[in-house]
Length: 459
Image (cartoon, rainbow, N blue to C red; front, side):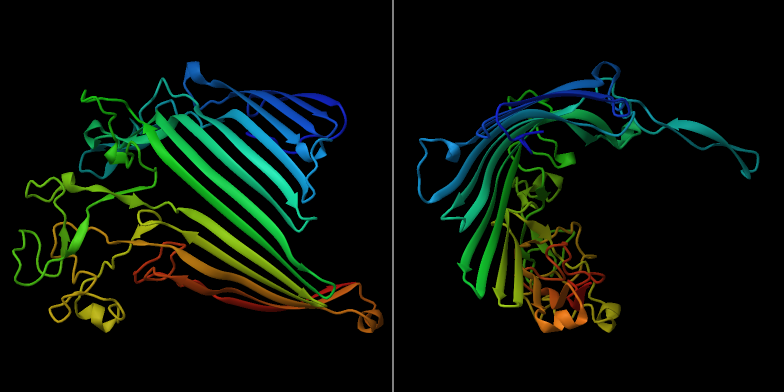
């Protein structure tokens, strides 16, 4: 466990636990200590073993340490507008495992020999995956700092946390040349760093007798970066990337590596061989006059910049209204996805109305956003768009019956409610749904709106 969780409270309490579980083959020693409910400590040492790793690497030792300090309970801490203030700090190592027996070569049974006229076959065995005698645990070392607070006589409360983790010996299936007889090879590579913040705030905006209004805001941001991979294999003094696996030093694991589009070829322009008017103009990144795999570049990331949500609850006498807004946002180079319709402007497309509402290029529409066809171009890259959105995700209105009606019906509780889900989405994304990454496709589905009316009865 990274950080402290459910630390025991009480004065000068001391506890030790030692657990063994043969099925997962782990041993754990844990020490919890709490003094006067102000100073909290948890220390854990865990030894895990797993059959998926190589003979000499099956076991890993993972320690963790966490401390907490409730400073608001100190005699010297006298701040009138702070009701509660607690700090917590955690540091530890966690392990990640693969599937069972992954360090060994796997063998499959297939038709291997054909006899006579070909009507009969003999089964044989073949190796399906390569062994790795050095496969070991993936390890994540992390630290987090958190603060819990309550302010202004319980009008504002929240939790804020910052974390910084480093993952080494990543378990990764690296793509290898097919001429080896295999497509990939499971191994341990490199280092990945993650940093982020998480924030949760709850406020009592209005706390009257007949009218109450509370709000809860949640915010999360994570940034990861590939720091190391396989080292400097070509001897140029620079850490090498793994473009065939989509991994690049200094970039996110969600990197987008593709051809960059610079408009659409127009009638009358000098169009290179393999393309025609109405197809995408691809940027020649290395300036050699050729468009090939060497012209791919890092265009951005598919990971979001941050996530944020806001829940508002209103209560007026027996009425309760709840409104939930959810949002995922990206910057100029984040939360991107390919969104180019893979259509051909032919008679079938026109008859099926596939082209309606899409800004295709044509001789009469030279400023069209999307190419006229994909069959007349050697390379067909995507046009990447930002998927940022704000969604009115849930709205609910309820009325609680009280008084003589409840008494006559001999009920404990009677609530009538009406609710709606996914009522509105604000986005620049073109297509079906930005959250599920459904763009301009024929078989996509819109976000389904839902409405419900119900009655809750408690006897």
